[in-house]
Length: 382
Image (cartoon, helix red, strand yellow):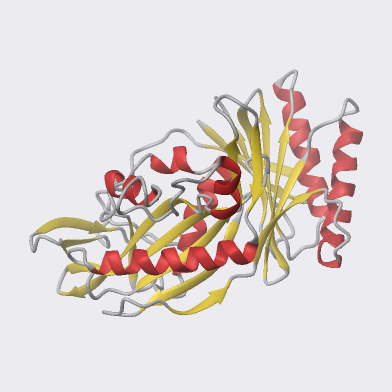
């Protein structure tokens, strides 16, 4: 059972859901056939429901990625795993708008293929990472680091006519290492070698071009547009994710990526020690918000903020508050206090999402949408 609350001036309104039910498809859902690479077809459902125009509708039954599970072992953190996937969807909006395309996890690059492509060229003839043959560990780190850590594939399908859909485009995310970790001797200390940004970008673009040429030779991918994004992972010590730094598209039938575009996105941890003016207002407001929380709980709390910036402007702020409660009443009182503080300390046009956890389980979610004066509050009820 779940409980939803919405703040109303001077009071809290609480609605209690009586139960849960499985989703059903209404009369507006479309039943279609999907054209596959083998010239056969299969039944597909296009749900009528769409959250908003920033989210793709997903074909049903849901198809998991052909390389399912590899991203967990190849990418550093859960923050990078999420951003590498959602960031690629966001990037794909420019090429594949949500009113014409439907999302499906990648079906062309299976786990065996991805592993082969991620290898060094001297370990596998299809390896995309540079050969380290004859190099010492230090030389390897300086001259031939592992550039690409993972390959993400997303498929975008579109209608072709009377109740039929087919692949309309494909997006590829190349997760790149900004830092190369190595050991000088087996079981020895681990060292870090930063990969210069220009070097990373140059090699990422070269690898992307090779990937596109290989995709063109696969059954069903000869003519569809292919968009490639370069995702820059940060250090495994960072608690904010990396971001996509560049993208390009090979048009229908083309094997060449045209005009790389720089992507200006970044995640910033708050509070921050940076003196950059673009962070100052949010940083000051965050510190005041944290002071409010510390006043409520005098033993102190570990309040962590992550701001997402695009083109130099903050788009949303996510805050995590892990805390130990001694009872339900204390928890509800704290959630009320946080909900009041978020409206008083942050500007109205900023989207703020606050996750409150206790003993590694979610307790409450507070969301203030941009432009809204009151937050939405959800309290989890076991």
